[in-house]
Image (cartoon, rainbow, N blue to C red; front, side, top):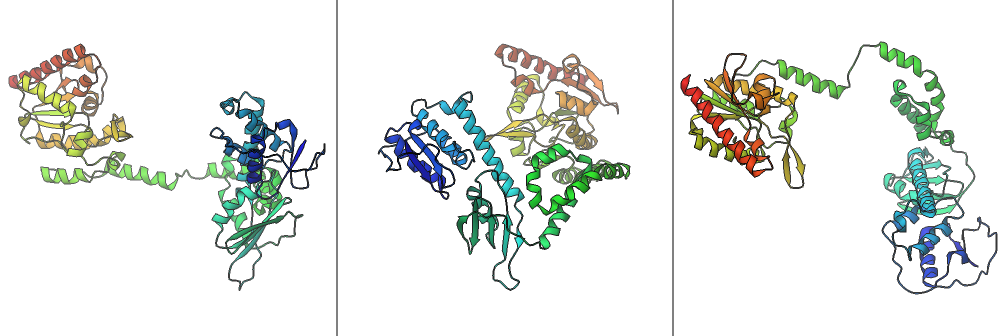
Length: 479
């Protein structure tokens, strides 16, 4: 039996170097007794001679090092032996780490999780007290903590980074970390020392009292996150019994008080309300319309879009064509119907005898809505709220143009113009009258045709779309 005694400081590095040498020497796990420091007694004794050490390269699967780097700080006395056994078995089964049904892998994963949780608790629940002199060059603080595992050393870099502008000492029963002038040193653990109270005690209590929400109190959940074992070293914990006892009464007082909204949410709602009820700016000419549209903030779509895309065409056009919203190319160009759907429309319109230059063509929504996917921007359909907010601009365009006929293309256009997009295929080819009496010819949007996967069906729908455009022109000529 070979006995390995690892140091209490730098334990992981020592275990890694020793395990590598023993593995290369072919020493099986059952021939090694692992210990850390002098406090972990050797129950079976052993040769205390030099350890065998082989040379060679040891490779391990991804994840093994990070797993053991946590496991070695667990308080389980078998942690080093378990880690070495896993290392031994990995040389024969490289995919062993992926097998969570393996008892050894499962146990080590659980141990690592417990250590990580203990490290998190230390970063959250260490409470420093001021122990420095008023005239000292650097402030000095001290803290006492009782971790469940040997987590002070691996957690020290966090405190050194967070509190690098002051000197501090963290004492635990196992180890003491001292940070002075930017350097860390470790020494033996101590019994709990008398730690003086200072002004930060009251600050902690004030902070905890301010964030305590009696209406959302769940005692078991709170104790799971803040276990009672840490309370004795946390000044604010003294308030917990009192706050729990009064939570019900305080929650009742809050419910009886006038309803309030969170300031940010209330602000957004108020802003939206004001915009919906604001007096419309003068848009009785195209320049003022374009100026106002460029500054549109009526819904969040403006935030990611390149620009608002207004309609274009003669203001005395008899035909207004309303599509859905700008696409990727329209957003960049600032013009409607210049992308693939616009090209399909232009081709069908030319074949149907519709001169685009004599129509006013626009969209129901003026900003491009999309989801980024790599370098691409994937079109997203506007929702009812966005359509509703943008109807203001479409109505302004209708006022400017006053067309004899509107060609509504697609569900978004129908919802904006009529408030109802249902049954578009049944309504297709028909003329409906809007609330102000303006006639509207219903058809599909060219993007619908482009999304059809079957080439034959796409050709058929293109032909029907072309006939719809002819139908709209025929209606307009007969009006």
